[in-house]
Image (cartoon, rainbow, N blue to C red; front, side, top):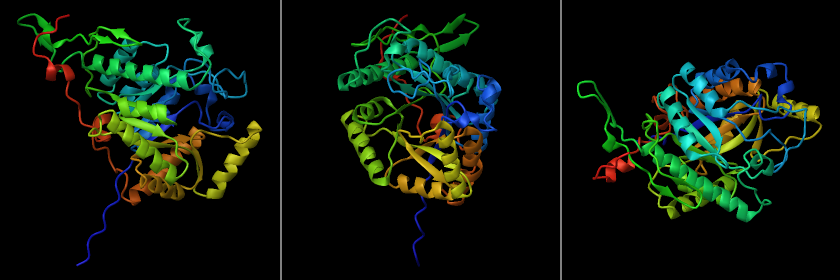
Length: 402
């Protein structure tokens, strides 16, 4: 009797939402809706389409300055989308309109305060009933530092990069401790005794580090997920270390299977060095996608959009132009190198997001590697991440008053 073939492992799928799409000329496409960019309805429609495709989550881009084609300064361009809504507030507006999909806003942790972000994302977790996440980003741009006036950043270099990511690691640690500063049953709401909360179940976090000194506790009770999902984009060893130390998901940008395998190995080694070898950590591959049933049409669309901008579009991530079947082949090839999921960046949201949900997803379902229905009510559940125990409830025996 022959053995049954081993089923292919399921993969996770997310999309990154930014403006009208990741190609700079996407706003000039007839279906792009650039006049609606700063309306709630525009973002609600995008997320509804992603949810129809049963995607794990969407991310929302954000920043502390106008978008720029230059890595460290404004570019002065007026022919591309400039300006954004606040990502956390957008996600909170969309949350009541959705039921299953995760909502992961980007937050720049350089120049901002972890206390504010912790309660904002905790609030998003409540509004979404357990579907919140966070994408951590750093900023090395002097013009963005000038918005705050708290410090002057030196010229970019290895030391600055290392310092910014060390600061980000501390930032996330503070946020995570603040999420745990209320035990799950701290709210009593006992009308008979007049006690709303149990003060013994609120905890000082007493974080003291080079970058932050935060006493706590939070003003927001522990989020429904306990810890909303933390993620970060990483391109090299220093940010890989941040992912390994503090993230639940790392987004990486390999251009082939060999590079994917090497990146995953480096992150896993950093994870072990950080003492997290036994903890689940997803590594998602990022790809920019031009998707059409006819591969030639996808290639031609890319060429046409490049002609509109007058230059070839480049990206930190691999750029794919082809059919849903070809993309499914590529995703499975990269998955074999150790990636557990993918975050796709639609080149033109109006075109490529529906191509993902109505073309790629059915193809992956036919192959038995993607869900046919949502199987959990929280983002952690969709990602196979357990709800973590509260660090203070597990270790504190004496009351910590506030």
